[in-house]
Image (cartoon, rainbow, N blue to C red; front, side, top):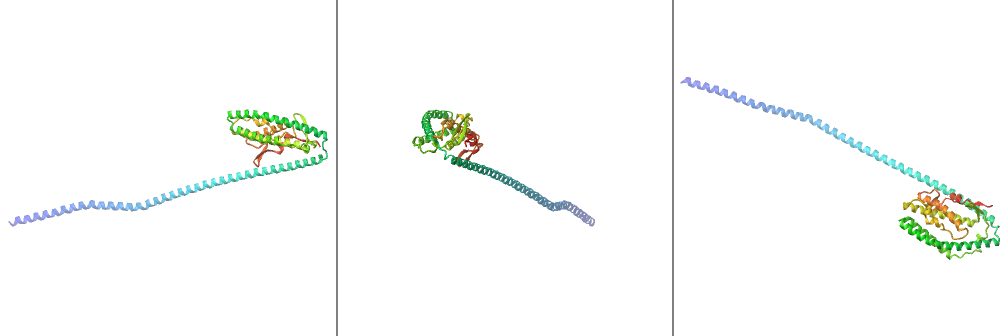
Length: 334
């Protein structure tokens, strides 16, 4: 009996020991994965801690590179803008210098022309003074007056005949849709009409006009034939060239505005060639000839938008004095 009790106690002790051993083994088995996880977390944390300075350094480096790139772009933009400003300033300086050179040339040319005009006026005055004592005879005066009266009658008849041709020409321009040339012709005709009114209302004093008792002081060649005139006739011929150039410039500009082919002979003003002529001092044929000489040169300048033969000053187109003298080529008789 005692032996069985003892045996059971031993068996219980053995079972208890084995149970404790199994529990301890199981606990150890559970602790090992937990420790590994903790170690892994520590490793990850340490790695993250190690990576943080590196990542921060990379961000700082990228930020620095971006700042440098932006700074370079700003510097390039500033350099480009400065270069454009320099180019613009240089261009403005070049234009200003060019304008100054043109102005200086114009001033020199105008000064030269003024000097030539002064010399010419002085010479004219000298010739007039020399010829004041040389008056024409009574017979010569009467001959000039008779020629003048006949000249005025013929000129008035011619003006009446021109009106019909002017109307036909205006209708033709309208059909061709040459607006600018039609406008120029109407303005030209208006100036001629005002001239006719003045001619009709004018009461000429032949007895006291110095043209009829002043001796000739110039001669000029037209068509291979020489003619003589005094200062008053010479002034009328100068006026013919000047008016011709001015009207020619307007006509040439009108054809250019209409995109019409260049043809100065096609203009009514060229065919008429009477603007500025009042029938006195020179024959109409002489006036027409020199008017057309000025007109041709003015037309070429106006059509080509240049000033080869003249200039623009004070709102008017005027022929150069050198060209005027070349066309007329007056030769002093004394």
